[in-house]
Image (cartoon, rainbow, N blue to C red):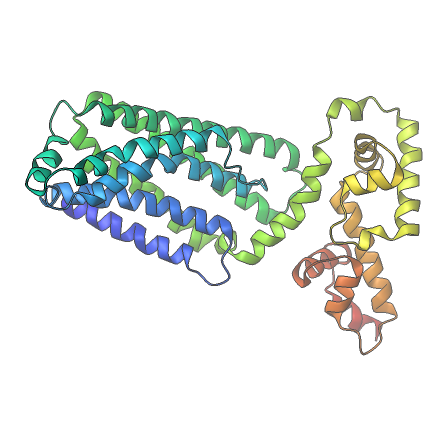
Length: 376
């Protein structure tokens, strides 16, 4: 059991280093790394017990009782980032985790307050049945917190799928598939662990079966990191945020209000939107959103969204990018040698070279360079 726990802990630490300290890192990678480190600390605590050094060095064990509370909230935070949402540290899940962590500190504080000769006896008492009531509370509340975090993550994913699944790219669908499977796997393993705690001795669950189950998540992450490397890159995450932000805003409008607008009114509004965008050129602002369009036209955002969706048969993001590509084509047609393609991208409203190339090829089937070569 010692070899199993120490081996898994070291592998998780290696994976933590790989995800946390990679060059030009993205925040989701760091959150995933913290999830792996949190789990590694637990197995280091197990290794100190199964290796026979717990009474002399119980600190990994104590640390795990303080950090385990954050496993569920970190999974929830990871899900938020993969669905384009911000991390809200005021969420009840984080509050419960903080209180549970403070409660867990009672063990190391008590241990350090004891005279040195009495410390090994106190440490040994923590492993004897019946367990201290504090450990039972932390176990039960911690398991419920993980289940609540998984449930909250599943709800967020389901809502995100309903809003965006038909409008996002294959890469974003791959990201969504990854986080869905990741959360589902975490939920299944939590349920299995809960059942094992009820039918098997605690030491067998914590030192043997749980490490084996965690190994599944370890290999799952390894598989995706090698098979779908783009999921974990900084550039693709920035593109993901750039693309989902305006679409999320658009779909935030109540569907009932969209459905209540007469079709002829939507057709007139769609023509007004086209005229406004062409005359104002506001789409060249990289931060342009559907709410800004609604404010400028003095029309409710729900009506703007309905006109774009139902008359133009596209979403706001697609409409704006089409206009930006048209603007870029016009600039390329009149390109002066001193103007670079990257400068044209920014002047058209794109905030990165990568997003410009991707959108340009989507709407013209050519890269900007290929389009230029055809002109000459």
